[in-house]
Image (cartoon, rainbow, N blue to C red; front, side):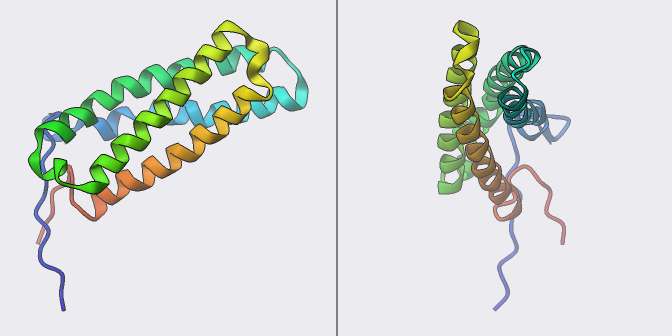
Length: 153
């Protein structure tokens, strides 16, 4: 039996019809994933450059992620069809936990750069895993529920 035709779910946080949340998350995601590499660089070399780089990557990732999340939250709470999706709420909850850990990671580094080992690295790895999960759930919203995309016949 064929699946019924999926109707698009339009984003309220959009510019010229383009949803803002997927546009805004790329830099924070890249920064937080690069943070893992930076932490491993410090673990292997002991070079303080990686401590400074990690502080900046953690900050860009955490603060940029919170900014990007505002567009996602606007869609979640103002679009009834998104609000009814368990996947939408799951994506939001995972993202909030991930951003909370990313913020903690930045704070650890800001207060004591030597805290990178082992706690900074551990938090970076857990954050990266949560990014993967949030990304998968976000993909489900787009590809299975047509959130923020135009579905053509």
